[in-house]
Image 1 (spheres, protein in one colour):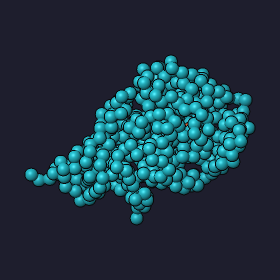
Image 2 (cartoon, protein in one colour):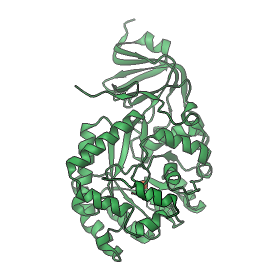
Image 3 (cartoon, protein in one colour):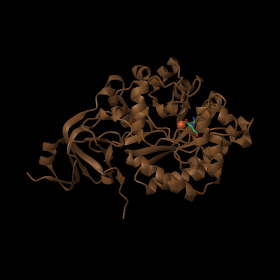
Image 4 (cartoon, protein in one colour):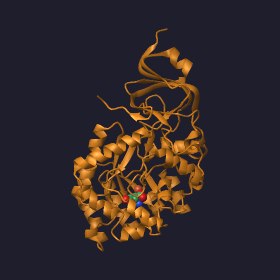
Length: 426
Ligand code: NIG
Ligand code: FE
């Protein structure tokens, strides 16, 4: 029998982590422990898409290929999907980190004009070209650590012009870089200095000017709000999300990160695609989210970086039937590109198993940004976004820490990282 021709075969995985069955609905509860592993597995890829997965012997019997990668007993799994980053910003805040070591809190620093406000100041001054260059380097780091799809929020411009500038940088990066970028408008990240004491006026600006401009130029898919005591109230957040939805931007929410404000309840009421952080979310809010299918994006890197001693209660959230995803929250206050560290923290500080954390950083994260039809599992029809881990089994994610376990990254069927190094196109 003639063999079917494909462009790429990836052979001899010790474990081929398929995560099958998670595409239509996120994996919930007990299902987060079943990774659909094929021992001794292979994948056939044609035109950037997965054609078939199975035991190496079967795949080799059915397919022949121009190119073959023998992974020789390593783990093969879907590329990481990072569903929450603040990718585009200028500058850094390492001195504020020192202040926090000495006891200042995040909100105190923000109230004094530091924190987000300081990054806004620097980002407004930066040119599009400068932002593009620094973000491209960041994306290379993310790619080396296995991320193949990333959600990126604006939110350090806070004028219509500067928010658009940052969203345009994302669009360019999406075109130029192997990582796929999913853009979110976060004009309601904080109240800029020029609107101090006039929060409702700023909300009006977001609603009347920014959202129509952003949606009109199709620069974002989601609308997010930092709903927090001293930032945007539940009522203000609701107004913004409703307006976003009217213009076709799907709701997301920074919810219950520092205080129990009712963010989880609001996210459910808005039928938000995701509610993120949720450290202080109420049981009722979480139950409402489970009912609506709103994904909980947990960000243990933020708790760690803020030295909070509080992490979202992942066990309870999973048990209540809420879909759980994990993200980095990459931003100048939580400067982490690497989702493997997030898995390490999720296992140790939130008692998630490696399997649960893998589901949360792949297919459930894809659901959190409406990309589950295309990425997040290794199944026929999906994009061939694949990573190879230098480990004998998937439990090394979470267990081993402080090194990059990613050996190879394949993005849409093309080898883009080999032996931990990004391959630049000639
Ligand atoms: O998700 N909490 C609000 N936004 C970010 C922090 C942004 C910043 O401090 O620059 C977060 O933690
Ligand atoms: Fe965030």
